[in-house]
Length: 449
Image (cartoon, rainbow, N blue to C red; front, side, top):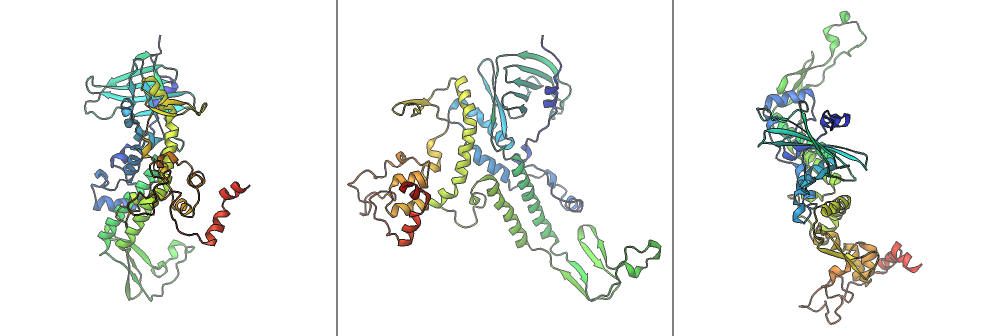
């Protein structure tokens, strides 16, 4: 008979409360980077700020760009798109295939794992039954269901008051995990700074006509902090600062004028600070900078675009490698047909059937020959050498339609196909310095040894 009380691990998962970053993804987030005075001023000047939705959501932009490159192609796996955003935000997510062979892709969950054995707590709600469910799933196939009525005001369920319903076997729990633990913490920190910067610009705009004043050419006695309070006089207090709430600060003293005004920060300075925060998004995520600042100049094209996107493509490739073993196991459980082929690593003369989770054409890495490779091609270096040393990972088969194997095509003749990497192309003559520099690169030294 199943134990109807929660185990220590189940109770731990039920109350774990990990950050889900859902408010960040949905654009409703807190403004946490401020002090008490800043908070008081913003609360007075902008009382509805906590209920607003940010108009510059870099968190959602970065997550969505990665998510759209990780959605598997097979129709049976389209439900995995529900788990990709939590996976990217939190670094791990569960997928459950029940005893009837139906896959479940939860969005609200808690997990604990030692890398081999995993326990997941999945939170769901049924409006039809008006019940909240808490399901614990184990790597050994067990699942334990707890439930309680939905609150009358439809607010999120609390962790207490759940009653045991049933225990089942025959489930399969898959844990998808990323080696970099997800973007949630780093992106949320940057989003907080972006939000703070937006409010700062608004505050500066409001405060620009409210100057700070100061008094010059005044001889003020030094303040003696060691003098007993009863022996102090007004002359020894020195310059005093008066805070006047939302209207700013005024410094006064017992001396006579003249008065002066401190120059407040300009909107241009605040925008420059705001842009510097957006520049850090590229450093944290690998997404090219122009993606978040499309109005800043002309976006690069051609080879420059491919080179700038290489880091992003490599990160996508690594994430695919992280989750592919679990996707293969899931595809096996769901009896998904293998539609692709690849060379059998054990027998190069044979091909084996594989799943096509992602379109090969989506990888810019397979198409890229950077400027260095084009220069080598113009100097007459073999295309095979460029592909293997300069741009490893590029498949020459992808260029089979570039006339590189057709000696009857002269790319220098107008009207005929042009191939920047064709061996017969009439390129620019290399200078002696270029030849000497290329002869000293590691690939050339290795070829001569």
